[in-house]
Length: 298
Image: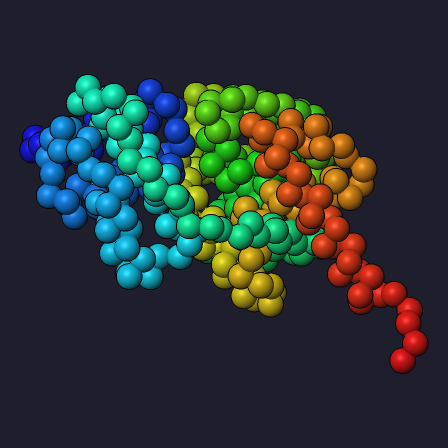
């Protein structure tokens, strides 16, 4: 194994096993590290530890020239700082020597939820457009779990068949391997039971609940592509993604009177600040209703 490959393997293992980061985060952080290593031509921890703010600034400037947005640049810088901190530890360099570089300012966007009708229609359209009946039932069940229980797509796809038969609640494992209990609506239970009855693959308790066409674990990309086709058919905006169903879960609960602390627990947010953004969503929804429905003189 070459020096560069060894660096990336060590970084991968640290993220996946030492920090228990999600597979998506691990892939993104390792890819970011690989770009830096290739751009700077380094293959030793000591060389990485010696990189200063000027080197990082130059690297990010090259990435920005490739079309990187402020938000993406901020995420890339965060990943680079984490990688270089790890490199300094491996090289035995004091943390105090870390390069200082300010991230680009990113305007926080407000999540764009879909309405309850849109959520149900989206799940139904995905079901109808599937190439096989069991695949349609599977995708409908996944989407209704995202909307009805507020799951991230990775959380839904990590469920094992041990959760069967579904009760009124299930325990899911979220970011940082933190577990939480979420409700399961009768509509969701019925959708999952329909999928299980149609699934042609055995579903042992230790195996994944949602299966791909060949029997392996279901890929999130397949669900995302199915939703993209369905939203085009329904004329929904590009913001109508699987993750938007989780936003809708949060927004609709808040609108129905749920308090922020309870919502934080249901969503699995580490901090209340992550949950508070939904107060802005609800205010934006109310303002939109006012603008379209409030009687006013012509």
